[in-house]
Each structure stands twice: as structure tokens, then as C-alpha cells.
Length: 353
Image (cartoon, rainbow, N blue to C red; front, side, top):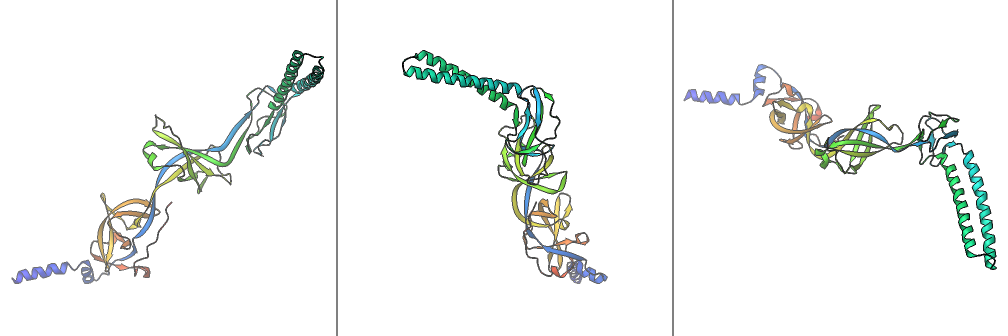
């Protein structure tokens, strides 16, 4: 019986924990840092790559083969809607307009005389009708000449920036020759593709964040404007168009941008990444119970801004070891570093990207 009693006493002594063993060995408990589990906002992100396009863009070309008389824009100049960009020679068309106008005036005068004679019974209705047709034909020829002149004056259809000039006044251009490209970059259309499997996670109006290699530290924020109603049958992806404000005009058409779409935002308990101990497929943290570290299994989710989402195993406010976990074993007594660990920290919500 005495042997059994001594064995029980030995087991009880061992169960007192590693702290007693450390004290007997003359070692102090390890120094660690602790913090309370905090509710943190996590956001799932869809990553994509897109191409920037101008809000509006048009290439102005010569409508006919003719000589350029004037070019009214400089390289990269801002032009207003309706501003004359180029004027082609109109000598022949101007002469045709003068001739047609003269014929139209004479035809109208003759029509007026015939109508006066008809009112007094000296002209037939058929003669008046014939002259009316001639006057209308003359007016049509004058209108045609005016339209031909107008076609030779090329104007900006909307306000924007002109391209670099690759042509000079005096050159004879053929029909279809490019004269200038006008781009409205007050905002940017960003086109990118999203896999069919992620269609349920996107919607018009959803915020996005884009980054350019030219400005790696500056995010450009906008929102989804349109989702193409037709998927590409080869890639099984859909084209999405987002709109980005471009007040400072840093974004240029043709730029390649990386896109991040925020999806499924939620607030969950979280701990710093340094608090997580991995072992195979499992994750653990050390919680504190009256100065003793307890190894606790947890289920983790997203990692964001140095924090790890804990989906199971911890409650907000629970104190966990955040630094010094590599020195710990289950049931080991610890010393806390810093007065801030004397009491559980007040939960704070951190905004994610």
C-alpha cells in the first residue's frame, strides 16, 4: 500500500506542470507577448489582369483624296468638341457651290414671275410646276456643294487629347488616310476577364482596385460597370468592364493593369500570423490561462494584413501568445512582456484591403 501511495504522489507532482520543473531547475518561465483575439474585417479578392481603354476614342481620316490646307492641332493638344482639326482644299467645291447658288437664285426668280402670271391668268399650272421642279433641283445642287465643302473640314466629335501628328499641311492624302486620333481619357474603361466559376461573385456596381506597373504604390479605385452577357466558349470566361476615374490623367489607353475585386466581406475572430503554429494539416495557438500556455487547435481561413482569420476554436477576447510560441509546450508557465498584456486588449476592427 505504501508503494501505491508513493506512486500516486509522484504522478500528482508531475501533473503540477512544467512551471514547477522549471522552478526546481532554476530556470525562469519563457518571456512571451500576448494579445486578445480581435474581430477583424476580411475580404475575399478576385484577381485579374485588364487593359485600359479610353472613355471615347476615334481616329479621324480623310473622307476624300485631297490636299491638306491647314492642320489646327499640335502633338498631344487638348481639343474641344467641334474644334476644326484639319481643312482640305475646297476650291472646286466652292466654285460648284457658287454656280449652284446662282442657278438656284435665277430659278426662284423665274418661279416667282410665273406664279404672278398665273395669278393673273397668263401662265399655266404645268409651267409653274415645271419651274418649281427646276428651282428645287438647283437648291439640291447647292446643298450638295455645301455638304462636299463640309466634308473637307474635319472636326473633333468630342473633347479629348489629340495624338502625335504624323502629317503636315500641303500633303495630298488619299481617302481613309489617318489624320489624328482623339481620345477622351477623363475616365478609363478597364476590360478584364473573369472565369465562369466566379460569375456569382461579381455584379455591376461592385468596387474594384487596379494597379499599374508605372505607379505601383498608387491604387486606382472604380467599380464594375458592365458584364458581357456572352461568355467566350473557348476560355469559359466573361469580359467585365469597369470604370476608373482619371482626373489626374495618369492612366493611359493600352496600359496593363492588375485588378482586385472585393467579394464576400465579413468580420471574423483573428490573430497575428506569428501566433499560428502549423503541424501537418493542423493549426494551433497557445492560449493563456492564469499564466499557463495551453495548446489549442484552431481552424483558419483568410490571411490578410498580417492577420489570420480563425473560423473555429477561439472566441473574441481570448488571450493568445503572439510572440515566443516556438519556446512553448502545452501547460508551460510563461512570463508576459510589457504592461499592455496585464489585461485582455479591447477588440478593434481593422479594415482590410
